[in-house]
Length: 150
Image (cartoon, rainbow, N blue to C red; front, side, top):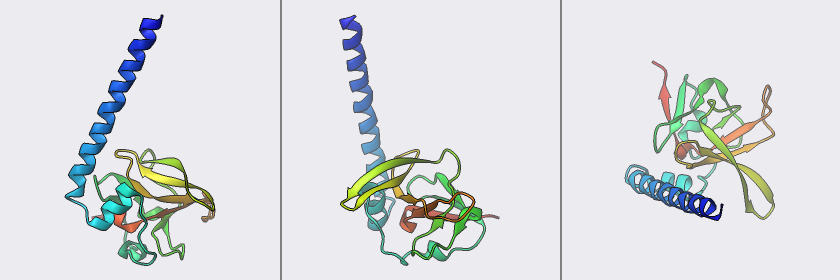
């Protein structure tokens, strides 16, 4: 029984080692393609200044994708003007994001939004959005690209 547990521990250690190496490779690759601001937001959990993103006032129909890999994360039908200065959405494209607890602020906890494929930081979600979800997915515009519908 102890041997099986030891094998499991070693297997998990190898899995996590290679997972971290893969994340490191992804980050190195995208750092060459992203602006320094986008890299800081997405891979160092930075925040762009409010009202600095052109995507905050983007009103055409289309899809918002991650700036690093192009993963579709939001549709324009779910975007609204929250008045915060960051692009805001009522819901993501299903299966495109993960939510993580973020306790980096001394004032309390927030819920961080990261991309499902690379774990890159996109923004935060709050419970002060409009119906029908009551959610405000507040995103950093530099973490997204907009692809208009044809």
